[in-house]
Length: 110
Length: 129
Image 1 (tube, each protein chain N blue to C red):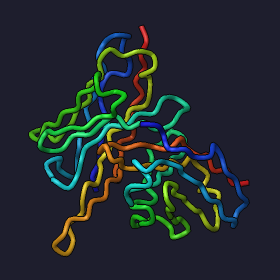
Image 2: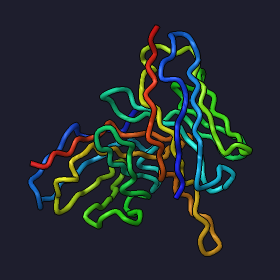
Image 3: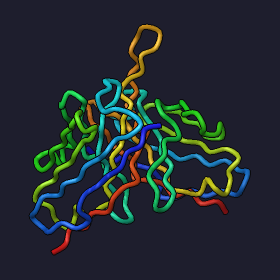
Image 4: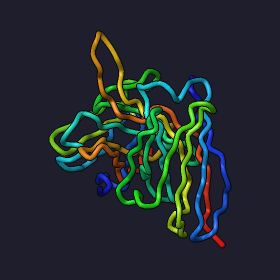
């Protein structure tokens, strides 16, 4: 199983919106609504931000939203804030009953 | 609030076996709605799923690591463990244990979810002689 493809980096000014794409195949992203997104700050464990494509766990700001079209999922951060600066990873459950992560995207707040 | 904590040697010699344990507190590994998983992250690189175990002992592994990996669960101690044999420098990574939400039972039906909702702090394992 190959890693899902994400852009290496995205950036935006405070208050702006940024969108991170996550491209997979019909065996993972395209098969189920079981795509999740994780935020990872340096030296810390990942934290779930979105699950099942577009659901937010309690405590995650509604500035974070997710969507999916075909084999590509997306995470949008609206109203960008300084503490949103981190690495973001998508993940998908697969038709082989395994999990695959994305290559990771570094979000920079200008 | 469940808490996961990894433990084990921080250094393993090439060709030997890496062994880590994840202790779970604030919850039990015997709940059927969760899987218990290992994920690793080489320095400066992305996340890689290693495998998971169910409370019954059934497992599933990353096909790229399957020949070298074994994950087990001990319900009596509320722990689960990872063994990775024949390690090389490429296995140097921060190893995380994590809980996977398998399903939620709501309104008389199962809703399968499959996402990582709780993580340990991670432990760096270096493969070096």
